[in-house]
Length: 290
View 1 (cartoon, rainbow, N blue to C red):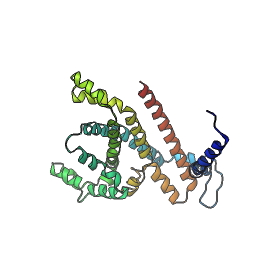
View 2 (spheres, one colour):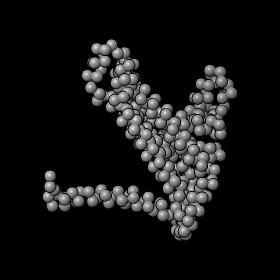
View 3 (cartoon, helix red, strand yellow):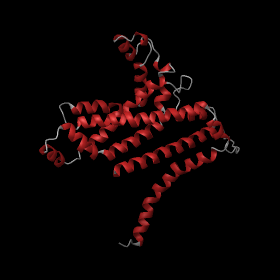
View 4 (cartoon, helix red, strand yellow):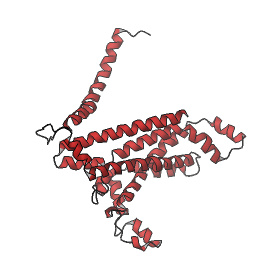
C-alpha cells in the first residue's frame, strides 16, 4: 500500500517529539558519560586523561568487588527468585481457596516504598531486638543471639541477597497473568488421558509460560544490576565495602567530585549490562525455539 505524502508529514510530526525526547534524555547523556569518562572532570573543568580512569578502576579491589556483588545479585535473582516465583504462580494457578489473599500478600512489597522496606529489613536483622536473632535463639542457635548480620563480613552479603525475595511477588503476578490466558482445551485433553495436576503443571502450564519466565529472568537481571537504594540504606556498601555494588560505588565517586572516574564506572556498568542481556537473550532465544 502506497503511503500518501500528507500521511508521511503527519507521521513525522507524531514521531519527532518522541525521538527528540529519547535522544535528549537517553542518547545524549550516554554520549556525555562516555566522553567525560576519559577526563578528570570535577564538575567545572575537565582535562583529557585517556584510559587513566579505567586503569585505576580495574586496579581497585572495591570496584572489582562491586562488580562481583552485582553479578551475585543477578544470578541469585535468576536462579532463586524467578524460579520461586514460577513455583508459586503454578500453585496459585489452581485457584485454590484463599489464593487471592496469598497473591495480594506477596505483591504488597511492590507497592511499599523502598525506604520503608529497607527500614523493616534493618529491624528484622537488628543485633539486639531483631526477629531473626530472636527466632534463631529460640530454636537453639544461641550463638546468633546478638549477631550483627549486616555488620559482619561473613553474613552481610547473605542478609542483603535475601532481600531479592521481595521481587517474588512481582514476577509471580506476571507469570500468573500468563497462565490465565492458557486455553482449557489443553487441560481437558490431559484430564481425558488421566494426567495428574503435577503432570499438567510440568507438561502444559510451565512450557506455555516459558517465554514469560525468560522475560522475568531478564527483568530480574536488570533490576539487580542497577540495585542501589536497598544496599545504600542498609549498609552503604559496608562493612569494609563488602556489600558495595556498582551504583553505590559510582555514587561514592561522584560524592567526592571524582566525576570522570565515576562516569567511567558508569560506562563499565552499561557494558556489563549489555553483555549480560545480549548473552541471556541469545541463550533464552535458542532455548525458546528448542
